[in-house]
Amino acid sequence: MEEPTIEDLILSGAIEVAAFDAENEELLYKFTEEASKIFPELYEMHMAIIHEEVMYFWEQGFLDIEGMDDPNPRIKLTKKAFIDEELEKLPVDKQKSLQDIKHILRVV
Image (tube, rainbow, N blue to C red):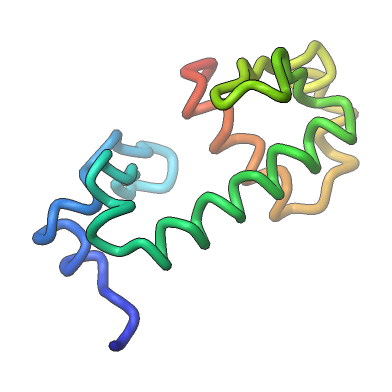
């Protein structure tokens, strides 16, 4: 099977619009609860990428994780995540990822 398009994912109910990024003038999407059943391989790949990103920012001191062994740990931004000098040290792709995390946590 070919990789699904955004339209495929929306029409199948696997993703839905989460917000509008006014800065980039683009829609932001999130996976629905049904996504893991509709496109399990894509959902697992997405979750692995998120896990990898969260662990990177935790190791770099931008995130704090409470209850790491829990099935649903609490993730918080640290003070470092708001220091411009520290953010500028990150590669551009990581700066964007951290900005996305801030949007998800509704900090910005």
